[in-house]
Image 1 (tube, helix red, strand yellow):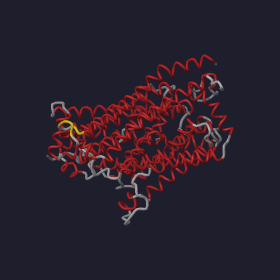
Image 2: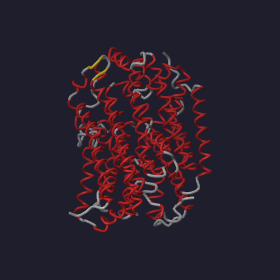
Image 3: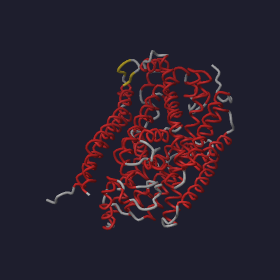
Image 4: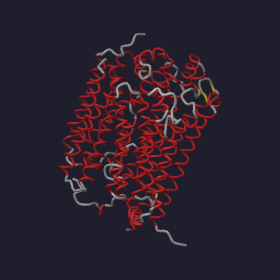
Length: 91
Length: 521
């Protein structure tokens, strides 16, 4: 087994998070778009007067975008920045 | 109700003049601080995260998002919201994949990131073609939008409006560079967010501050279909293709990417995207209220009677709930919006022409500060003239389609090469270069053969390419070309160079490595 360097570990962790969050964002957004494209009647169904399922899901996609962005900033501010600091000190 | 729209009214002209004086004051102040290329392109790199978050939002929230989406929702209901959502979801992608590595690897333009690990000359030429194509279409859209808007709002002739926008924008960029452009974006973003919030609150006050009561009345007046997907998205593949271009295009817009160089480090870049995503998401949520508010309070017929495209929905709504003074304020905000976006685009175009092409390719990076600044300013003047000429030449073109085109090219030409250069060790110069050229050409050709050009504009009986947005073909194609070309002819030295850069990708240029004379005061 080849051993990995600390830089490679930081790099791998950063890309794992980046890819997972990107996939999550795409899944939410393209799920919404696919519903718009393939099941219009479902999205038109009313949950309450004035609120269709489509509008609720649309607003939720915006909230998901906020939540994922916030998740990344939190992860980076705690874990990523700490590993970067230890990389700097190693030099 | 008779509208004061189209009449030059004193209040809108007063607000408009206040904004012009304020922004020119900022420009005079910024011009004294603009002494090096570092100032001109990157505002001296001391913009804070909160400021850059506002400036990013200012650069991104164009007239298309304020007037266009409000109008689209007012006239077609739910379908307009698809754009609101698509334009926001690109921001998390910018955050996860692009912002921090971009800040750490480059200096002024996104091509710096590719040039850091690949061969300068071919890479910068290819990146410039993609960038300039995006900037050209985006600029045309904004100039045409500005001409129409100012004609409708103030009653000025179209050509005069285009010349005024071009001249004021030229003053900002030429004298104040990135410092003035950043502050104009910040002022504009605050005005736009504040104005839209106030407008939404005034609308909601009529519905007991319950958005659902507003939406319910819209569906009572125009049928439940306004709350469900309808005619705008008919073909599923086309919907996906548009969604893909909107999402990934954001991460390939040169004027947005350039903003990440105005902050001191990658941590600030990260925080600034967080702010930008919050502001832009909030703004797009407001468009739900503004669009349906205009539909209910003003009425569809009154909106399309003034402008068939529906672009006057938000100003009409302002007049409806706040009278002529509020109309004047919102009109001035819309004008400021266009001016600021045009300035941001021109500055990124000037950076491409002078930093990527002149200084790096023709002069082999041997230009001193004086020459760099002079070339950047000459490029700015050229771009201002070109954008005025194009704005007049493309009078009457559909603005939304031009913006869609810019996003499709940005997603196909710039995004694949940029993301691969950050993530993928084996990317070669030839791979990145062919990806950017194939992406640009494919997007342009497919749009030419699409129903939008063939049926709607040229009135041919049928179109060779069935989709209105090329993204779903051109984006994967651009990725595939980069990967196949890189794998067919591997370049081990370039893969080694990537390994050398990996530390800089995460940590940025560490203080010991800063080359002498890099523009730091």
